[in-house]
Amino acid sequence: VAVLIVGIQWLAVTASMADLLLNALALVFILEIDDLIYSVFVPHRASNMITHLSPLQLPAVGNGNNTTGLGVLASVKILVIAVMLSLIYVFMLIPFYGRISQAMDILCSGNVNFVAYENPVTGIVEATTSNNSASFHWRSADITVLEMAGPNIKGAHGWNPDNRLVTASAATNISGRIIPWTELP
Image: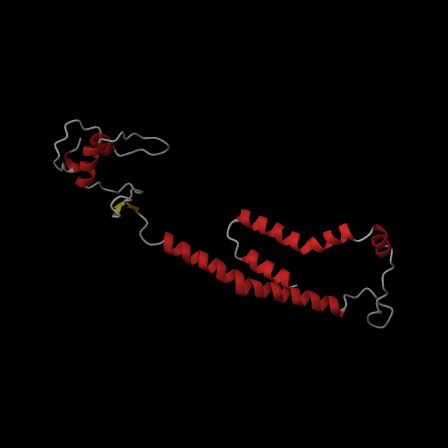
């Protein structure tokens, strides 16, 4: 029982589906290792004798004639299992997935229209806005950087760059001055 409880705690904090499957298989192996040891080390004669034992007679439930009732012990077991599953849900799964939800809120809420990068040489964190809307306006400093760098910008893989960016990146007369984006063709 203790191994089952610890195993459930172990499975409750597993985040990825692949790890959950592997951990569940490991838990099943641990729970069934005693049956494997029994089948390997108990002599065949003793195992055969145990399998051919007749079952014990249970006392009759109710007035003595009705033996089809559920029984008190089975009802208690079902109730205990239901309570255990409820407790596992309330005290383990809700807090775990609550923390995951909180982490998603921290990482994915607010202004997500930016990109940040730490330069490994200088240690300076550089950040800029990203473009995910049609109403985005490029700053003249951004256009000047593209003029100076001269990258090969072209539409590919579902990205269609703004014509001003393509023009600025292909500029051959680099003056080194900031050209307002309104002056670009």
